[in-house]
Image 1 (cartoon, rainbow, N blue to C red):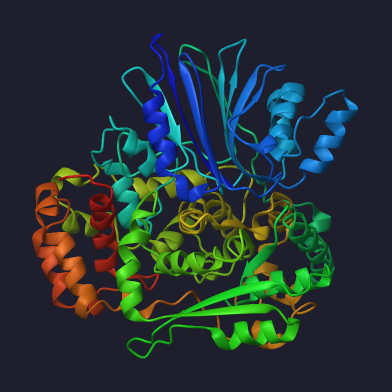
Image 2 (cartoon, helix red, strand yellow):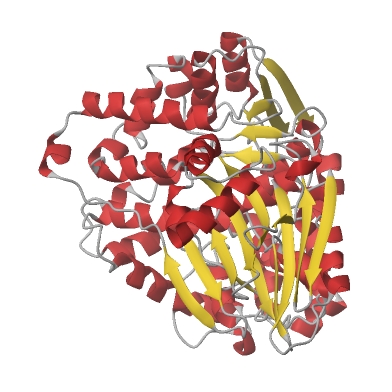
Length: 594
């Protein structure tokens, strides 16, 4: 797990090594162990390293293979790299390191674009070919690892984080109105390739983009498309048979994510998903497993922790458990740092939870497994059941998920920032219309797994864990697990109030008390019911000079929110005031003036 960056020029001018070094330096928390920059005339790559696999200097990056004429910067982990290495050695390749980075280089030389589908892992990387002058950019199937890019006057810059690009300068920081529509409508989800800034874009997940030396796009392909089609035999397969198949696949996924030259722990919320990971690791013979949980102060009658269940799992499996209770004052003190760590503005309250939990975890361990993705893959959210018999799936989805309608948004944004049409609804309509998923629930699951998940939960985990040099692995987003889930009929996923097939599979592994509990979520009550010092903080951010000069929100709308924040809660139990404040707080944290 690392931070990557670089610059390519198209006009013959030398790459700006100082800009690349500045981006790499800004990403030091992502890779605190070492750094490097390689420059060759019109291109320069930078890297920050977190040593996980091959801890020696042989695994340092940028990695240059002089024989093959390839240079790579890579962020992530290829879990099946030992098998790929053996296959490549049988074809005559010789290795100078024991890293998965070098496996990517040799695989690209051997198989070209066909190599990418062979990788099981999370990854974002750039490869420069010496002979052709081409640059190849690749991102994993679920965008677990980020890759941002920005056009410059002479070429292109790229980085693992958007703020790193800003530190190199020369970025158009005006607001993208379409992205703003998505942010305000779709609970802060801004689908690739857009970001909230006009001058920055992100490579879509499951994408290979090849640029010629002159900057033109030679090719761009999506190398993986999930299918929700199933055979008659799969449609008729019993629930119990699906349990057996799913359990085997989950075991394999968790096992894959143990590959490392350092210990691997678990972020244990106490829910079914993270508890199942602990149980499966125990089956694999893991002893004295390090597990970590976090809690917050109660607010307005809502409990701020789920220690009851994480304690139960810890005791059951004898883990080395660490509990962190965060007082409100400490949360308030660290909120600005958590916001600054975001590559894009996000509204979920658990950003601060992951930030503070990662701070503590990183003191003792470098790699953890986490339960993100299970709700999107196995149908755990409340907006899926209404879609089962929906005659208009798009409207049913929007009515359950969207924070506000297009008409309502026009009452909240000033005209300058209002999109010309309902961009968010149009996006959902187009996605639902794609072939490969006939069932309305499957359409929503496909979209959430490949769009919403990428630009909310997955991005949140990467940003906040990597702020402390902590690598988070997500076994529920193993592509073979997701492909299997796509073949399981929707009715099995929605059974037992959601995630039925996963819950019943988990029942074979973990205590039933965790499975039969009321559904929880990562609670931070003080940020849902904004008052006291939190209200003063957001009011200040939304009314200061920078915010007034920017003028995104109508004054009367803000005054309504300030008057009674608790009366303005979205369908997803989020605060409207927190949502609008997070945008301004993030823009100001990045030094973007109005």
